[in-house]
Length: 215
Figure 1 (cartoon, rainbow, N blue to C red):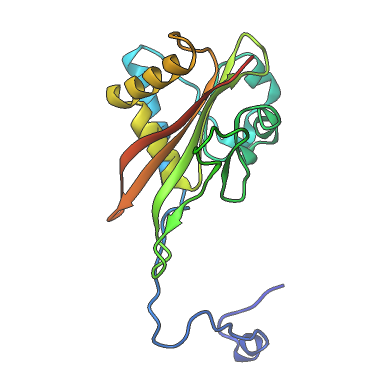
Figure 2 (figure 1 turned 180 degrees about the vertical axis):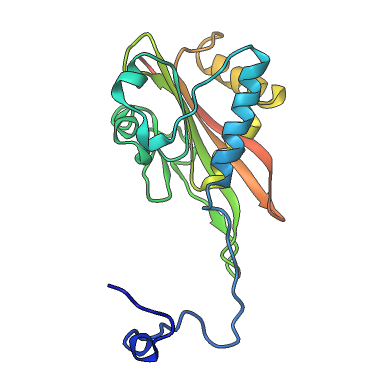
C-alpha cells in the first residue's frame, strides 16, 4: 500500500493515533537500542587483540551450524536471535533467560532469589537496574564452548561484559565458582550480573549468583 505525504485525502484515510495526552512529557529509553551489543563486541575484539587473536565477527542471525561446530562461539545479546543458540542449555542449565524479561533460577537455595527482572523508574519508564545472564556452556561439538552474555535489555548485556572483562570482575567470578566447585574452576558455568544505569551510563556492577553447569 502506498501513501503519499502530499495527498490530504490519503492522509485522512489513516486515523491519527493518540499516543500521549496533550502536554504530557515524553521520555526516551535507550535500553533496547542495541548499543550495548556494539560496546560488547568492541571490548571483546580489543581484548582478543591483546592475546594476538582475530575473532570472526558475524551478525547473530547468520551464524550457521557448521560455523558453530568448528569454533568456540561468543554470542552477545538475546539468544532468541539465533534458533540454534537459543536451544543450547535452555532445558537443562541451572539458569535460563525466559525471553520475556526474566532470568529464572531453577533450584534456588533457601533465601536465594528465584528470578531476576529489570527495575524501571515508575515515572519515566527508564531502566534503573538491569540484569544479564552470562553463560559458558558446551558447544555444538563437545570439544568447543559457547559463551553468551544475554541481558534483559541492551545495557544489561554490556554490563556483564564490562564487569567480567576487568580483573576485579573476573576475580570475583573465579572466587565464587571455586567456592562452589570445591576449589577448582569448572569448565562450564553461569552467572547473573546486576548493573545500574545512572545518567545514561552503566555502572555499579555486582555478581548476584553463580552456578556450576554439569557437562
